[in-house]
Length: 395
Image 1 (spheres, rainbow, N blue to C red):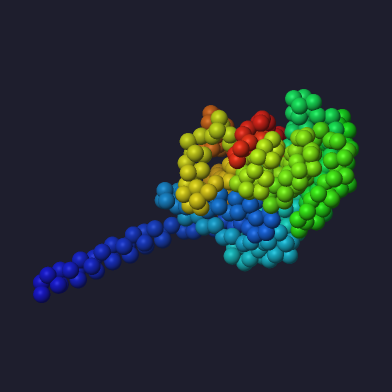
Image 2 (image 1 turned 120 degrees about the horizontal axis):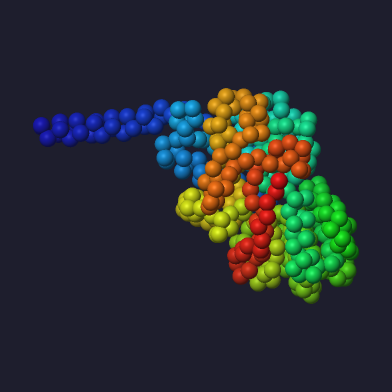
């Protein structure tokens, strides 16, 4: 009888102990950070990388006891919404964030979505970090959007110039999907190529995103004999199909894009035919990566069973949001305080070796600091993985 009572008492004590621990953890208030972006369809890899990066970092910070702002620890909660690359759904996603009282949102991942959510963000006091390139999102009077990566009009000229100087590229051709994002990126690429003195031999060929046979699309382009074929704004799903078709048509020149890609998708879709394909990569090369970046990659891989090199860039948005709020706690609910802080903000960059800093840039491109500072890393694909071609910096 006594033994039964003892066991019962022990069990109750264990439950009470667990409850206490749960209550102790629950004492941390929750800071919600939103994500609105594409996690399904041909461009899914872009948004999935965003969401997984945020979730990995949030879980890491929560495991450490929370993120401290003004003497208070907060548990970070990521509230995600798949906009399916549809501007109307992006608006619905941003409205959901407003309803939940969220003031900081990462995404959307495409131009249309980022432009569509602007009124909702501005009306509801939301700062958002798109992976989209229209300059009007970041140029006054707009002030609520912060570019989360290097833009095509910043990376394109750097890539073309490198290939001109190191590979003797003289003639370039552009191919783009018949959608606003890729077409805008193509037009920016054409302008940059001409400014550098390159001969643009083709810039009007387009394709539908659901195309399965790219031979008739690429044949007239290949016939112009470009040294460089630029796949403007190409989605990770379409890139290997276009590369395979170009190579099977006998094209032996260089192929590049200003969008980030997925090495696994390239390997599965094009194999060795994708060798030499040039794209914008993540913000940390092996030489630049700190111990914290390596731990991030390890944690991400354990959580999701795989890793996307683009997450080397996508890890930064959440870090910038939290560190800026930490620098000015009033920004927790006041985005105007956040904006003021951006102009002089500086914090250690945990993901790079040396004395690298987190700062806002973009003055040269937008006339105001509305871009996170991450290295411009350009990759070349080789045998199933990306290798660093060169690294540059954006002002």
